Image 1 (tube, rainbow, N blue to C red):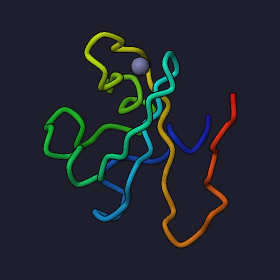
Image 2: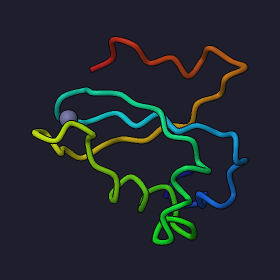
Image 3: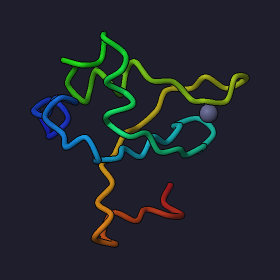
Length: 83
Ligand SMILES: [Zn+2]
């Protein structure tokens, strides 16, 4: 049990961005929650389900990803260089 199983995509502010990091190749991208909710399957999904649904945007890799919330007003969420 963690925040990912507690929080639905629909609970997030539309301006909230998610950091989507590939567990395999490390490719990182940002997705706005509003953009993800255009997918009807994700509208009522909890963030752990979102994490399972999303895949690496690299067509060759397609690895599983890890999602994190991005708090633009803080720098604590910065995770550069972590294995
Ligand atoms: Zn990847």
